[in-house]
Structure formats: C-alpha cells, structure tokens
Amino acid sequence: MKKIVLLLLLFCRSLQAQTPGLINSIGFYTSDGNTFDSSTFGTINTTGANFVAVALVEAATGTATVSDNFSNSYALACSLVDPSGSSRRVSMWRAVNLDSSHVGSGHFWTVTCTGCFAAAMAQAWSNMAAAPDDNTSTGSDTDGTITLGTLTPSVASNVLITAVGRYLASSIDSSFTTAPLPFIDFAGNNFGIAMAYKVQATATSAAPTWTMAALTNTNFACMADFKGVTAAPAGPKPGTLVTLGAGR
Image 1 (cartoon, rainbow, N blue to C red):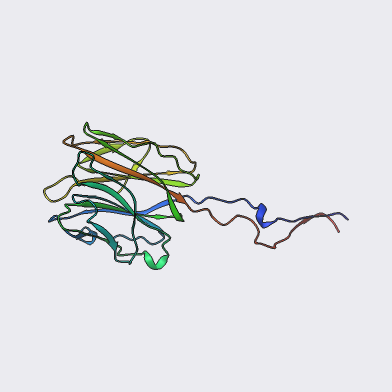
Image 2: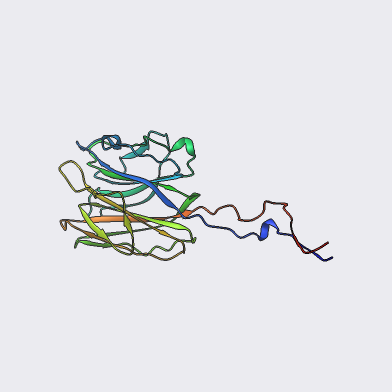
C-alpha cells in the first residue's frame, strides 16, 4: 500500500501578524499649571497591554517628565516645538515591551513639571512589537488646519498615533479614530490636546489633517508609527512530522 509522508519544516511555516489593539485610554490636565496626575480623573485598566503612548502639550520645552504607578520607563517618540518661536511643545512618549507586572487595573500617569500648564492623554495597546519605534512626522498651522508630513510605515502590521495641541481640536480625517474623548480644551491653567490613531494591516502611507475648533495663534502636532508584533509561525511545532497516507 502507498504511503505519502509530508514533512512540514519550521522554516517553511507562514508567519501570522497580530493586529494591534487599543486596550484603554484617558485624558488629564493640570489644575494649577504644575505637576498633575490622571488619578484625579480616574484610573484605567490596562490589563493585556504591552505598550503605552502618552501625548503631552506643555509650556516649557523639555521640563516635563512622564511616569506611572507601574514604574514604567518612558522615552520620547516624537515632538514639535511651537514654530512661532515660543517654548511650547507637543510631544509623545512611549513605554515598550511591557509584561503583565507593568500593566493592570488602577493604572495612572503623572506629569512632573513646574509652570508647564500641560495637558496629556494616554493610550494602552496590545500586540505591539518589543522594539516598535519606526517613523515620525510633524506639522503646524495658523489657519485652523494641520496636515502632517507623509509617514510611511516599514512593516505591514502597524499603528499610527498622532497628537495635536495648544487649542481645541475638532476633527481628524484619513480614517483616524480619536481617543480618548472628549478632547481637552484650552483653559486658564492648561493647554488643549487631542489624540488619534489608525491601525493598519499594510504599510500604507498617511498624511492626516487635524482641523482645529479654535483658530487663535499656532497649533502644532506630531505623529509616530509603531510596529505591531509578528506572532509565532502557525503550524506544527519544530520537529513535528505530519503523515498523510492511504492504506498500508
């Protein structure tokens, strides 16, 4: 009888991309122009996340620092100083390759600063690569719209995240989703801020446009794309033989 033996080799198995997913998000701002944290506005559950992005708009460039109650380390992903010549800045910070001991219920963030008049937003994501940093772009306006420079991801599974600040935003195009909501408006002790994202399964270029509700003075934005994780190959485990046959 005939028997057909098919060896499925590990290196021949196809890779399956996992789609990045937004776990949770929150917005928060200072009440007196100085250090503040998001627990004043509530805490969020970040269980399942392995990546956090925090957007920040501040008055004094480079003086604010971002931390959280899970002792994660935040590095700068993108930023733009107000091109009108002031020290105001929009920036995005990220913590990467987080395990289950660095996320969970009761998660909150602290922005440490003096005279920063800042506002911030945080997003927690799952299925992000251990080293997710890819490309960045920026944009600014004085007429109520900000079109960011074209950004092209280097991998198929990716998420683009953008933040805009100083005054109140109203919308963003190019199929971006805004989160968290509502947007934070400019007030006596804090700037306005908004944050949005777009999950992609292909390395498609993007140049979204923010539309601002308040047209006074300069608004500014930055955007970064981050790589999604590539799953372990699908199929048999290394060394497995699959035998297909008929008869003996």
